[in-house]
Length: 152
Image (tube, rainbow, N blue to C red; front, top):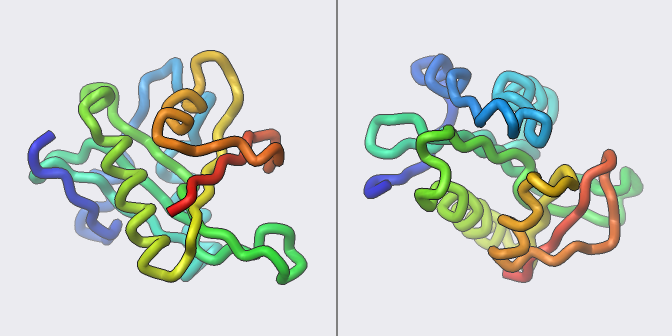
């Protein structure tokens, strides 16, 4: 993966984004891109969906959440990685690490000192990947998912 970059999802690349799929055994751990894009539409400026390209080849999709009112009380605003889908062919090639780094850079650029992620618990789930990148479980759950935090 020599030429990784993020691009906004637009009408011109929508079909490429929608075609991004994970391995069948991973589908229970992450929502499909189409659901993420629907949620991005609903959440407006708080969602940051991006197509991950290697050159012109789509290899993944990510969506960050930016300044979300975490508890709905206006007291705890958080930013972080909401979704990460990497194509089977690109897994193990640094795409996930690149994606997390890009979200960390965006969250940091916006002034936050830490970023969050949630993941479905499970032996084959993404928890080990996020812990390897330095995320630590907070002890919280969100929608049955483990919440992790990474200092920036």
